[in-house]
Length: 437
Image (cartoon, rainbow, N blue to C red; front, top):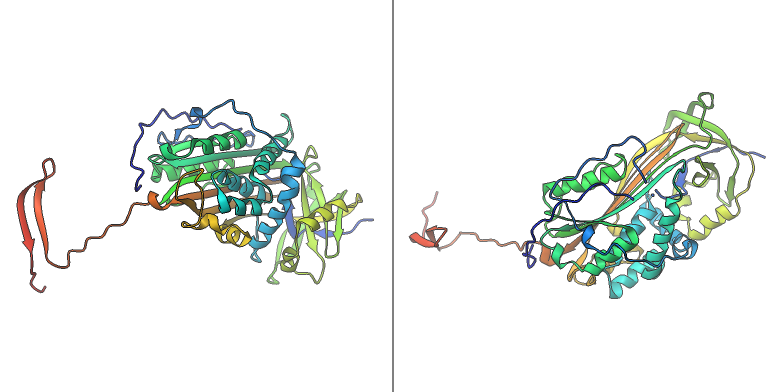
């Protein structure tokens, strides 16, 4: 780990899994109107982490108070532009699912260590000054958590994993801020195979088993992962009865036709603008809903996505019509994953990924973002919807990677046979010439 060679004795592992007039429309483009925040209520049993994952959370101040911001002003309104822009850049004419909320939280945790131009670029991408982002997100997550006894499951969890011999050098204020605003769990770990397993176990636990793996390996120069996990499970306010489900034909983007389960219902809110129609289908409790948008005939899905914007998104909801809409929704499920670094650079924050230009001095000198892993899964059927997302940001440091040393004995050299206690040469020789093989 370069200059970070100090080792601290591992404290007792404290992990216990804390949480904290009608028109017919067939849905093609789908978006969940709520991101994915509380308990393991769907039958999933959390798995324990290894003893090598040492919790550092308790060492931080538990009584710090944060300044929350207004939901609309500090997060949702300003961040919708980030959400639509990231989705546009993520779409590759294939099944796509991103969680703007998950990515925003992970980036905001990372931004708490940024300064100078790096911070300015990240604030520009996220759409607000860092203080407003922290306060707005904290407020929005409290809003999403809602009251106990609600009829849907919405959970959010954050964690920071630090290579054990770097942990003593990480800025404490950075860790404290992320604990205060995001209730982040902090771990010190050896960043070996046990850590890979622990990070994946944490991911699986916090997504109720929907996403069971975040990483396959850890780069030698990666010293930290900042991770957000989201999970949503909601039953429809009005479930589809068996008689409302029938075989139907779905025409894919490439023109192929498949027979799928089509679910038919009448909903009460209709979307319409110059190139799309759609509907809103509520989940139990009415706090969250599934919104679907169908591009008009003659408008391809690619054209529709390319034209998306925060203003158009707001306009769709502002001008929605409370009217009976006959709706047909296919049952579907799929996984999606993305390495988001290139997209975030394009969106305006290239400095954070540049080892020479990045300023994460509020975290650790010479740090920069090495990777941004984003994985999602969704399942939509007659009962309701389950969706999960995880975002992992891998921080790297040039000095964290072991320097590669090479010694190639392909010319005259000296050698010895020594005892390793005293380094005494029992034999000492030199090779100046070798015969041909």
